[in-house]
Amino acid sequence: MKKGLTGLLVVVLIGAAALLFSGNFTKNRGDELAMAIDNVNPLVKETTVYGMTNQAVSHTKGQMGEDVFTYKMNTVDMRGARRTLTFTADHRLKLAHYLKIKTKGQNVNTWEAVAGHTVPSHVRQDLSNS
Image 1 (cartoon, rainbow, N blue to C red):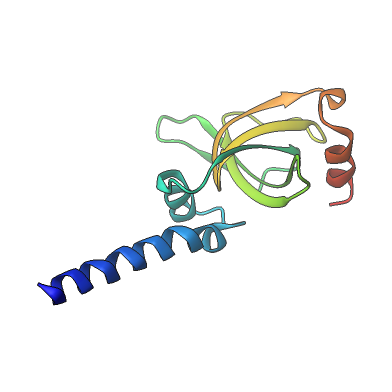
Image 2 (cartoon, rainbow, N blue to C red; image 1 turned 90 degrees about the vertical axis):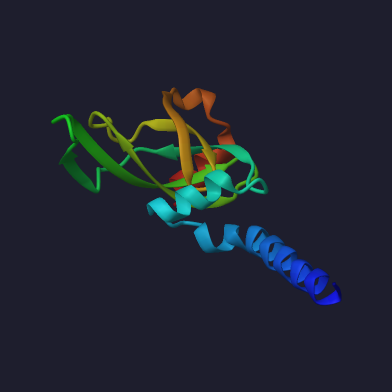
């Protein structure tokens, strides 16, 4: 009985440590594994970040023949924390336009183009310095 409880405690502690430190593992990684881990991790909160569009890093065709553009961009949140995100779009984005991106860790949930005056000034400043 005592060995069973000790084993269960070890498993719980390993699981808790994995959840706590997975954010360091996934930060600035744009692969599917990082996105999946962040998506299921209850300790990773949904946040809003801002980015400025750049050139697509790749252009491929999807399974149905649709265009798929992959972007990798530097982003900044309201606290000034920087992060690199990778996401796809079904069309080529205009260069040097601001995006408001809702994320859960590395997982991009939604993004939308926004006017520069709607982006907080300290975030615009941080984006122009990156």
